[in-house]
Image 1 (cartoon, rainbow, N blue to C red):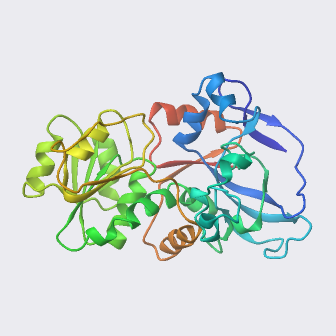
Image 2 (cartoon, rainbow, N blue to C red):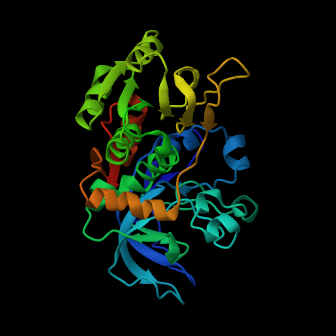
Image 3 (cartoon, rainbow, N blue to C red):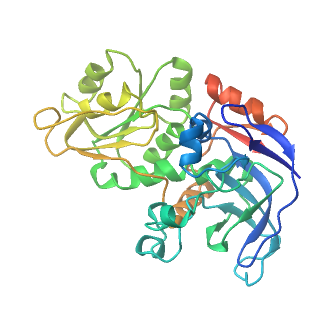
Length: 347
């Protein structure tokens, strides 16, 4: 089969021919229908050799932690899915038996690191291939008649903002304000989730009008260029009190301090992006009782809920499809910032 793999530190990924894997006991072999491209992949491929190998990533590694497919073959003992089922892959694999995993919160598994358990495409072999192994059928969620190409990104680009936003929903009733920083692959889905689930006015920041046009297209109430005037404009739009919740889908050196500075008293700041930013704060430097969170991915039940939003027409991911052979170009386009929404590899 063909697979898009990271084969050498610091080099672009390559399409190679490798054997079709066979499922072991308890495993499932999927015939892949779609695999999502993500900045997290770019982050991993940007690590130094010491960082990459030190964190336990293998070489070569098939990319892709967003996956969808058709069940193709069952390992011994698997009886909860059937050959021919259309499924999406829940990516943050855990041990399955710790306290968090028992509640479907495998993204916060307390044993994964010690046991060497890694997500597909981020330590295990991923979805950017004609076939992939899923280590346990509990990581498969029914896709039904949803288009896998349009919806595979919901396994991360939908699940991650959904998990981030859900915790702040009690603060986002009618008459409130939510700020979204970054309207790219995750942010444009986050805007739709906020509009579907909350009563908040959604204010979106990004660095150019092309990005903001996408934000307006998916329902943003206000859009602002993220520059030195942004803080003042947000305070003006919120009557001087700031936003009840801020979601930073960039997480860069410039954006996290901005996010903290515009949070209202008792507001939430949720940093989702992994742009390398940080902020120092203490008493008197931010509004009282502001909560700062750094969530990771989402729960298994939340993936089911996100897919239900898609079925209801509440979430529509902007996608740019690429063939498997064009996979390296997809990552080049991602690095250049030229992708509108989310890139998807279609084997």
